[in-house]
Image (cartoon, rainbow, N blue to C red):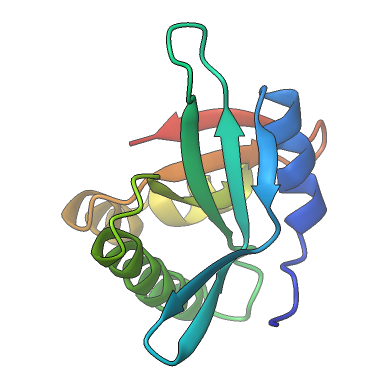
Length: 138
């Protein structure tokens, strides 16, 4: 099993504060002979639905020496996981969890915005200090 991201516990706390229940830590995807590990699976019960809403969350810190390389790696992993979720007919959308700083420095810049819109990424933006979700982008 891969190592947990630096912000793993913070994202779990933020999701819990936002009314989500962590259902998988990690969410294991078995495809062919390969096991892949999405950081988290979560569910939120909605008053109008008996089953609630499920999501998958991949956490990225964007703290490497190159934000472009971090974006490249995050995009590749995100697309692979999203394709497998779709192929396995799992209905939960995949979110990429990033800090407010990473969102501002990467996804509000032209390159990150291009990737965000072209590949229709879903983002969960969280605040490191108060450990809360501040924005959902989909």
